[in-house]
Image 1 (tube, rainbow, N blue to C red):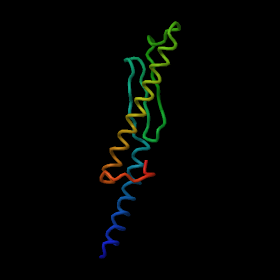
Image 2 (cartoon, rainbow, N blue to C red; image 1 turned 30 degrees about the vertical axis):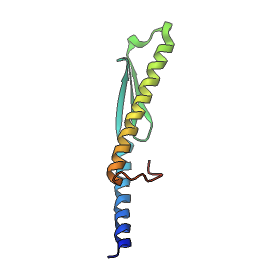
Image 3 (cartoon, helix red, strand yellow; image 1 turned 90 degrees about the horizontal axis):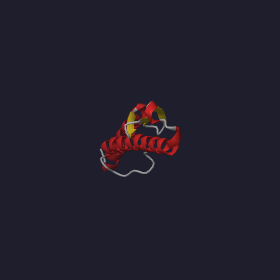
Image 4 (cartoon, rainbow, N blue to C red; image 1 turned 90 degrees about the vertical axis):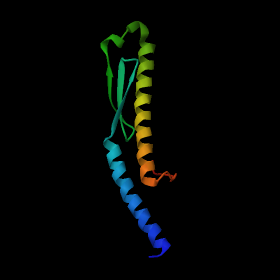
Length: 102
């Protein structure tokens, strides 16, 4: 088999593996808790699927503080799934930076 044939076969295997990884990432969930009061859960498709707020975090006199906790939790959860996705893609691509994969 020629070198080009080997490269094409490797590319096909990598493409199939990426499809599998993308399916897994769609259901992957990661959570992040801010201040012990607000938890956000995000999926690998970059959607936030749940936010939990402890009742004691709700202070009508400090709405801004609660908003900050929510933002921190959501951004932390999204960052966690993004990091996991990048690690899984690197495993498939062997660390190659291939545009458009994630």
